[in-house]
Length: 240
Image (cartoon, rainbow, N blue to C red; front, side, top):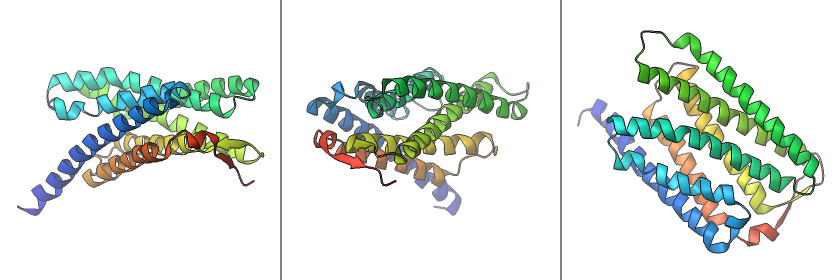
């Protein structure tokens, strides 16, 4: 094999393997949540894992160059954004369950941040879109920009919430901390991929795509191995 085909073929194979691993890890985590009964406390997390397990199989089942895959991707993105927002809302509820007033404040702060971030992300993309672009390319660009705004805003919200909690002697369960940290990492990975495609007008390096996918698989595996009923009773105290 010549170096050029080898440098593109190997990452493509790795991404395909990692997508299958993502689906498997998400499916196992969903099963663990159901089997241990934790899905009652984290119903949105259970839905998120179930949807991820199904969605990540779409590139393996459908031809990515076919129109069917394009429309599956287009219609699945809004579902992904809604689940991302709802899962952070669920985390906010669990973290601040003893302070209902703060839950409402945090919830509306998150909604406002997501709307502003998505709008600014959309505006930043306009200079890169021309009327000569095909309709599908414009739609992909709009969707990527919106997703970038949503995930980046949610990651920043989680970081700020965890930082605020670290200023006070708040006791949280290990599961709550695990969910907050892993979702922050997942959202940052998704934001990085979108930023490279839009803000810097770059085609993502295939090896970087492999690294991002591998990071998401690692997060899902940590969820599967570390999220358990014992983690609900193991208290975690922030060091101020």
